[in-house]
Amino acid sequence: MSTTSFRLDEDLEIKLDCIAQSMRRSKSWIINDALRCYIQREEKKQQMLRETEEALADLEAGNIVSGEAVMKWLESWGTQTEQDAPKL
Image 1 (cartoon, rainbow, N blue to C red):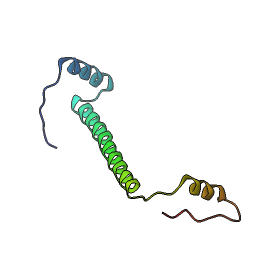
Image 2: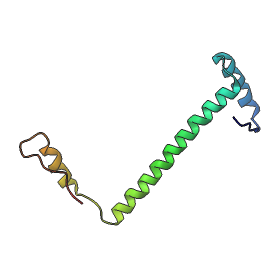
Image 3: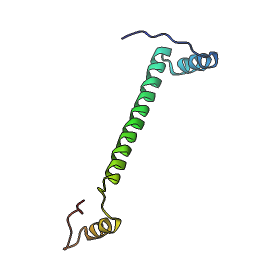
Image 4: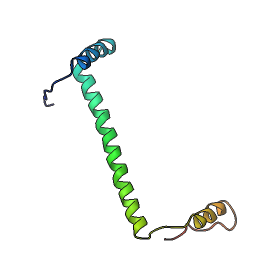
């Protein structure tokens, strides 16, 4: 495990001390947990952005299925005339 130092605002330091004491955890554990949560959230945001950009590129390329075709397909589910998914 590596060591990183940084400046912490005084109000955060006070809150961190209080939380660490109430949780009976070290400040280091809390900081690692908070940073892990932050990084996971940011990674999800970046993944969503990439997926949105890919979807927009598909849209611009004309790779779409009409809502009407999708609805007909969905309405056929579970019937004797169930249809295959609409093609691009």
